[in-house]
Image (cartoon, rainbow, N blue to C red; front, side, top):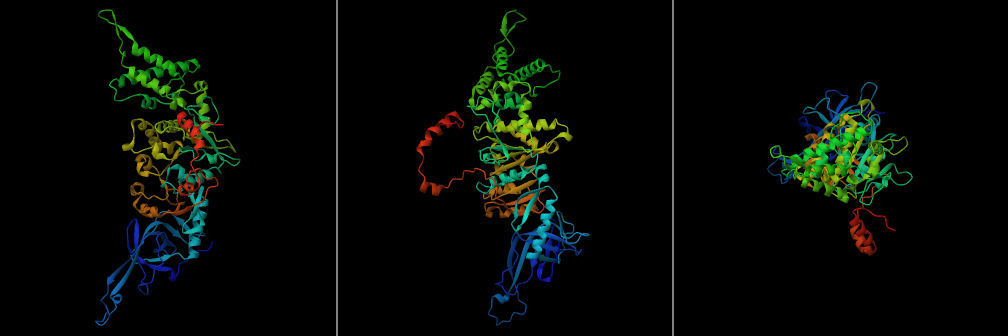
Length: 582
């Protein structure tokens, strides 16, 4: 590869001032006031150092022109206002890395970090077309050697492939953020498409709106389709997912059925936990196992048996030690409201996937079958699973996602480190079930805590989060703060922009000033997985998601409302699921 060489014609100015995050450059004086300087926002600059083979690389974030009064050599007869002014052109640039144009036998080596900070007076160079091509080629070559994850092209040189470090992208969590219509779904589809090229990729997608089903269909579909069982799903099928209530731990179950404001809540929780433990111990004994368990152990038991035991407590009698006459038992009347809530949930058809699953799900070995569906990576098969939550009511959604996340984390934590296969959870529309604390309802607190734990500890156990949201300001702060990689598409809301900026170092946040003016399919990529933080143009995925963006004006001009679909739609609405119609 040819070495990058800068010459005198590439000089655009010199360093005026510098700090740890950015540099201010005074641009060379232009021949007249009407000239336009070549420096533009987003372009790269190279700053000379004391070592002639080392250049500090920056990205321009601001260009401004000002005028200073010039009284030197101005005659009294001068009538020109412009002759009394001096043009001052400056640019600001953030540091993105170091270029070593010669390193032993290698040339044009780029690395993150600053090896030699500039000093005032150092020469600053622009990249001509040849040097830019050489530099971007070196970036592409470097990225090929570090688990390349290809998402598009660099905006400054659309011939150069923009690769991210796939290992670092998933190891340290990632966030994909952008307003509706900015291209988030395209990006997620492209990400999954790239992962499908690996032999044993293991990704679970929480598909809230059912838009990624296109990745699971056709001969070349690369993902497995799953859906949470709806009220009309009463039999086991390979594409239907049940989460029986016994897979929930005590806190998750209590978050569904226990009212903490009830003055008898401590008594209710006590008896609830005690009976669950007893029933699980009975199941273990029946299956000939000799193990010690806790109330959180995922052991099958019957809800009908639990309700019977609770009712016996609620109606129980005791014998007075003084009069030897029957009196109310210690729990008598204290569980009535709790039992009513538990029965109500058990009969709620929206919770049928949890409280009324098929009989087969009560078998002792069914948990292994559930995990096989969620985590299997068959060679030549589909290790990417798309779970369709579109038929799940919004108030149930946080519970379901939280249980799946916790089940995955629990299993991974009990597998020896040498035997773990890493798994990533792609949380689409994450703000709907991972809200900030001030937006969180009582029922959402436990599921959110499950994901907060994954965000903080998941890396150690091979569990990664990729949170996708159009409202980062509504997204849980703890989870977002643990993301070390951000791909941010167009964001027009000032509150959302501020939320993202607070998660990045000040030097990196300068890149986000472009967010409101990004085109659809353009993104700013920053983080540990990004070799050079900059704007990228996303590649179009082979399988586009079913985003259902309607063409309002054209449809109003061409399509009447189809009265024939009313019966079918009303049936779906009443059944709270998509029914099969003839």
